[in-house]
Length: 109
Length: 114
Image (cartoon, rainbow over all chains, first blue to last red; front, side, top):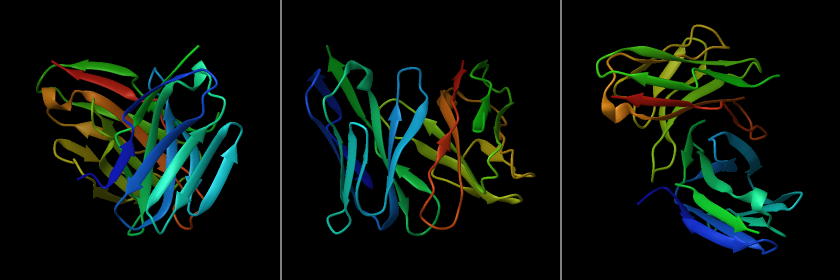
């Protein structure tokens, strides 16, 4: 079993829909990251969370440390949101990141 | 622009050849790391460094060497390339210490070993 599990693996939505991507982890962490990888491969850091909730534009990330679970929400989704979204955790034991397999999001016009 | 610079972007190697993937950052980040990304799998850590002169193995270190002679540079060496090393490689850096930092990724190197 992977230390970081994402669901769903693939998600197709219509433009304007509310999107939720989930991440569960099994190790003690000091921070959780949400990353975005566009076609063409570049990886961009969206959020880093250690507790609570963060919002940036139409993106919202939440984390529940007790339940070892985080969600990434996209409001009013747009085709340009189509990308792979990756959850990664920084374990309390050091600086290393452990990654989920990613969620492929496709938003159709 | 400040960031992580990876070179080359694409490379084709023959089995047994050696090469070095370059990674440089100009943000004075202490922590640097190399990952490989394969279809159906998450990014996997190859090697990492918490500062100049200090390196350690990650999850999949076999077939790769690294060194960290300066804070800025963290090259990844393939000594004898194998088809199993066909992958996309990413370098990333961050500050160490405390919780208020993020990771900056390079644009990736797509390596094919034939």
